[in-house]
Image (tube, rainbow, N blue to C red; front, side):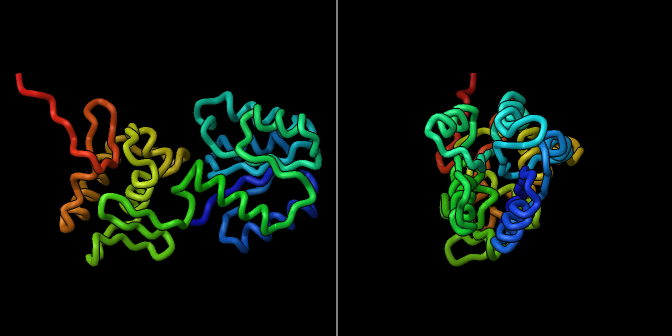
Length: 236
């Protein structure tokens, strides 16, 4: 699945080159020339990854990265630093600030695309086109198909995204609010109970392959995808 990448770079030629190569790789690129513009963009909608130049007019890339890591809403987002500063201490500073990777200029477009793919696979697997196989299900984002063995399962677009996110974060419990942010987008304002409706639809879609039990309700917390049988509280 194409990722939305926020590119924060103040040099127009470099910005254009990077955006063109990421576009050819299938990503959607949102551009900013300084940290203040990037901050406004992030307030409106969270990107899947931030590609951040160190040297920016006004606030530096390091300062902006610190802001992102300090706020709960943006704390978990992947960040890759781009910089001409190649000294070891600079790399240590960037990584300690919270960057997931650190790429020194000049770099090849192919290397950049590969490094982005590696970070997304590690930090935001739902933003990649890698097929996922778990619990007898296979979900392929590239073809938008879900199969249980040889049986194709019909899912709506929202149920597909919901299943993709849950399968790429197995065994973890996600609240309704977290699922809304990750699946619908944190800039979309809908009732939390909307999640329950789509969970029911997802379970119905998985029922023909007897995989509906993989979507578990954790009372008082949310939902998870698990291949482990759900434990029930003993009757009193």
